[in-house]
Image 1 (spheres, helix red, strand yellow):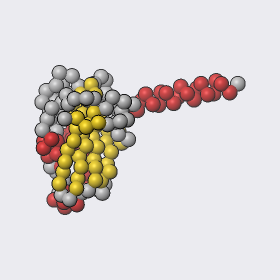
Image 2 (cartoon, rainbow, N blue to C red):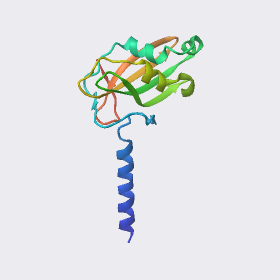
Image 3 (spheres, rainbow, N blue to C red):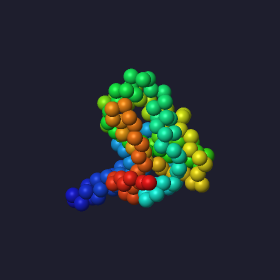
Image 4 (cartoon, rainbow, N blue to C red):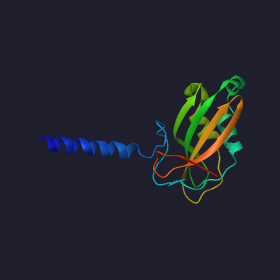
Length: 150
């Protein structure tokens, strides 16, 4: 009699995992249309200068925030075929509150990519240290392990 309960529990776990499996980071925005997209795994598909990403994300921050921020900000950005951005998920490991950084609006409203043949999920890691910002592009094949792309 216990096996049907375990079966139902396993099915529910599988459905839950499938529902959240497209998010690389724990904080999901739930505002993107996630039909089909490519995931950058071993090379950069959605090409853009890192300075443009940094400017789009941090351009609306006040100078105090820019000077004081330390830590790492991970972003999963869906780029559609027109070059529009939609923040899918993120992880804020900085010393600033997420609300103050206004990450979703900054990415969605300010970050424009070149046209793409297909939708692409780009993973960007911004590292903040002593007033300097470094952007790195990452790839993954399993939504868990990230590798740096060049």
